[in-house]
Length: 94
Image (tube, rainbow, N blue to C red; front, side, top):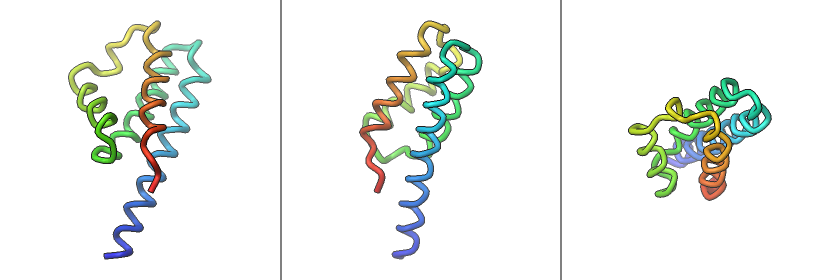
């Protein structure tokens, strides 16, 4: 039981870090919307595995099912990167 819990903690920390790295990549590529969108999608994929850890992040992830990132206009990418970043900042690594 203890090792399973530790495995879950390690997994959450890894996914949180992966999402953070992808978000940073999106920020760096914001002048290239196609590349920024790909990085943002990678961040979203990593964040999806954290479903159930934070109510606000969960709501965001559910909303993505109805209004996916692919539908965003290029001008909407920077605020969306910051939005996901702020949500991930509230998720504490166990």
